[in-house]
Image 1: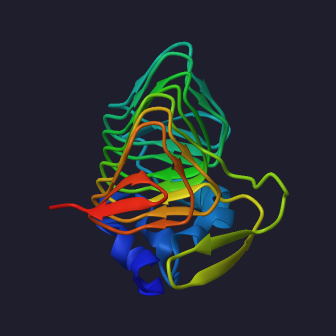
Image 2: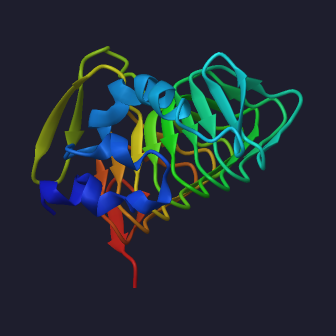
Length: 223
């Protein structure tokens, strides 16, 4: 597996996000993390008032979205068409929630891009991360976005390492990734398209596309 497998081009269908422009000129998806807040403000001010309501300071919500009365929305954020923000969800800011996405009960988002139809439906924490089209995180699964030693995050592949220069970096999940319940995605995790993570997993580094992560010693190709 080469470093080219963790590029934006290999991980994401940029037609499945309102934020496609933020990835222009970038090679790796984590390069956009410091840019999300400013990008949201710029994009939000161009959104049609016929399709989006501005409900607070730099908070835009599609008229077709469903927002529970107990959800907390902090800007900057954009909630897409037909998205569902359920009871007690906490959007801390710098969050783009794609069309048809689900942010579930007691789920917390911070500095993230969720592509269209992403599901983080039950007790999830997603911070400093990008989740691709139709990615799904099972109940209780979280992204850990800061190393315990507070050092800068390095993405570790089988035959390569990429220094990100970032202290906060959760996970980059490609399109159609499935993460099992109560899994932890450690800082610098990158999961390729169409891969599955077993429940109760502790994931670090790169999981190739079209794979099943059973444990750190057993990552198998899908048949």
